[in-house]
Image (cartoon, rainbow, N blue to C red):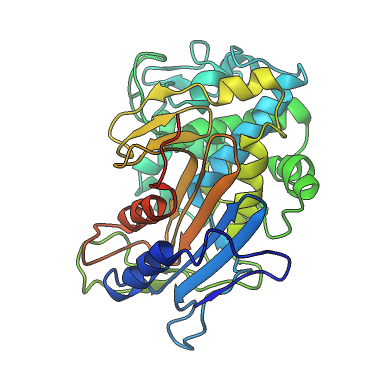
Length: 365
C-alpha cells in the first residue's frame, strides 16, 4: 500500500489522513487505482491504493507513466515565459503578429488577442474541445485543424472582457512557441524543462503516437457518463493530437512534484516573469475556490489553505499537482479513471479531500 523511494525519507509521520483518503477512493469511490507522491522539507513519501490493471490486479507503481491532461498547460506556459524572458517575444504581442491570418472569423480577431490573454484564458477564443463531433471525423489532427474547428464557432466574448477555459488558447500558444523558435514544442519542453530537471518520465508525444511508455497503469473511462453501470473502456492506447499543447503530455507523480517545486521556487523563470505567471484573474464556472494565472491556478481549500499548481483530466486519467507558494511542500496524485462514486461526483472531490488531508493544518497567504 505504501513505500518510500530508496533515496527518500518518510516525512510528517505516516500521512495517515492521506492514506485513509486513498483507501476510501478505491473502496467508496470505486476508482480502479490511485497513487500519490508528497515532497516535504527535502523528503518524499509515496503511497497507492487499488490496482493499475483490473484484469491482472497488478498494483499501481511509483514509476507509472500517465497522461497529465491540462497540467500540460503549465509546461507550455513556462516555455512561453522563458522565451519572453529571453526577449524573443512579449506577453503583449498579438496572436496576429506570430500567427497571421490564423485567428479570424465568427468574432475572433487575432489582432486584438495577446499572448497573455491566451495564457490566462481571457482571449474569448472558443475551445475546439467543445465540438466533439468535429473531433470524431478523423484519427488525428494538426494544430491548424484544431484552430479551424474553434474558428467555425462564435467567440465566447471580445478579448479581455471575460474568462472562459479554452484548450484552443494553448494550441495557439504551442504554435507560437514553434513559430518563434523554429523547433517543435516537444523539443522545447524536453530541452528546457524535462532534461535539466531530470524528468525522465515526462514527455509530449510526437505526432499521433497513441502509446504510453512503460511502466504504466491501464487507463479506464466511462466516457464521462454519470451512470454507475456505464460500460468501462480501456483507453490505455489513445491518440491525443486533439489536445497537444493543451493536454497531451505524459509524466509521473515524482516528476510532477519536481517540476512544480522548481517552478514555485523561482528556478525556471526570472523574477519578473515569475511575478506575471502568478498574477491571477478570477475564473468562471471552473474549479471551486480557484483563480487562474498564466498556466497555473491558485486553489483556496474549504479550510482556507491556499495552494498553487494545476489539475488535468483526460479520458481514463485525472491528475492534480499542487503545493505551497514557496514550493517546499507539494503533492501529486493520479487516478487511472475519470469517474468517482459514493460521496464524490468525480475525482476532483477525491483530490480536494487529499489536499485537505495533507495541507489543511495550516493556512498559506
